[in-house]
Amino acid sequence: MAASAPAPPFDLLDPARIASGKARFGSTCAAYCHGREGEGGKTPPFKGRTDLTPETAFKTISEGRRGTDVMPPWGKAFSQEEIWELVAYIQALGRQPRPQ
Image (cartoon, rainbow, N blue to C red; front, side, top):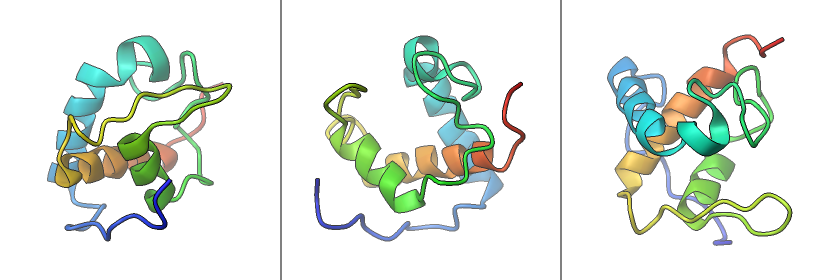
């Protein structure tokens, strides 16, 4: 992985950016792996998750992950701004209660 993620180009609490990230998440991340609203699917839930830093989320989305939990890299499919919108949405999910 790269040494560090770039700084977000906008406030990650911006409701419009969170909404854009939610739409992108729903069309690319939800169906098979992460669940419709980040409640988990093939992966642990994002809801209630407070240990995932924005920088780690950005790098994982951009570069993917290999090993026991494989994730494809999205850094060539999405712009950095689009990835940061996904991060904004994932962070918003982290502020919601963890699913029971």
